[in-house]
Length: 181
Image (cartoon, rainbow, N blue to C red; front, side):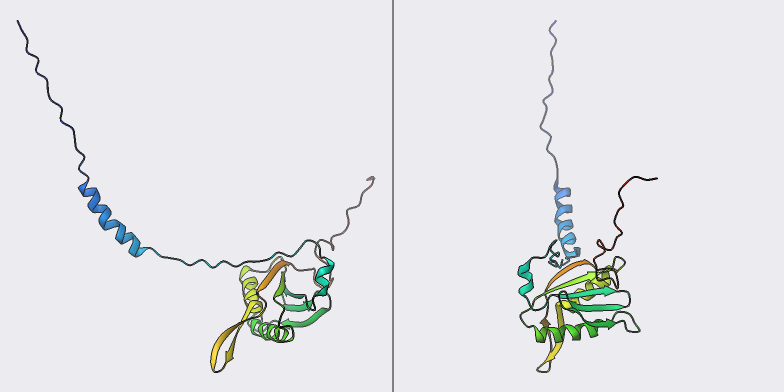
């Protein structure tokens, strides 16, 4: 008795990916055509130094713009308050601030640095619009509107407490040490 063993021949299975390739061919151009290409604007900021050195005293103007609830205080760090720009009926008066910055730039054409100090509750939008008014201005020159650069190197920081002339850290009461009774 001989038993015949019949073996099945296994054929290699081929993967049919034509439907997938068709999908990719249609999907990739569609996704590329509907993609929104956004432009990111990067703004470089310089934070104020922790301690001032004597080399900074050589400059003729150390411009500071302090954002208060009731307006802007524009001053020289060494010389004091230059001018106060109050709020208009609609809020902060950015055009008046821009005009003042143009006047200061005319007096100090080589100066590029300014410091913007804001109170803790100042909104981000107010801070950005103030920096824009300090950095550049739109002026009419030869019959066309052009943008001029005023103080592009802007440092930001915390405003001193109103009326004290001190930084917020220095205005805190000292911590008392000793025995408690």
